[in-house]
Amino acid sequence: MEFVRHSLVFLHLLGMGALIGALLLQFRSPEEVNKGWLHGAGLQLVTGIALMVLAPLTGAEYNHMKLGIKLLVVLAVLGLAFAFTAKKTNPRWLPPTLGGLVVLNVGLAVFWT
Ligand code: HEM
Image (cartoon, rainbow, N blue to C red):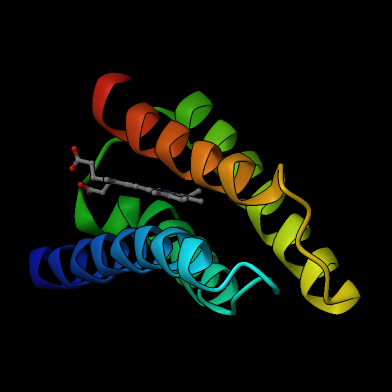
């Protein structure tokens, strides 16, 4: 079961990398919201929930308050990315907001034990 948890954490960290990649790509092509936000946030949502749900089997113990807040933050990223991908517009405040929310989740993951 440890291998399953490690594999999910591996994908979870790649998802974080994809979100940082989306932020950098956004500065290069600012016209539209790039799809990397949706892919990265989707991967974080799926792997994060899998880690949480499988915790009784993997033997991991997590802070549920922290995970609840991370869940809300990633849903905000997904909601904003979906809304503005559909509108095909990218207001100036959107990339720093999405990037800030991602960095917030990294901070919560690392500093809140
Ligand atoms: C933008 C979204 C997210 C980012 C950037 C992110 C980032 C991270 C990072 C960097 C870690 C590793 C922390 C460490 O090992 O010290 C981590 C671990 C974890 N994350 Fe996330 N996360 C996100 C969303 C979520 C969501 C939505 C959930 C579930 C509700 C979640 C659940 C977890 C769990 C359970 C771990 C611990 C894995 C383990 O070591 O067993 N994450 N996250």
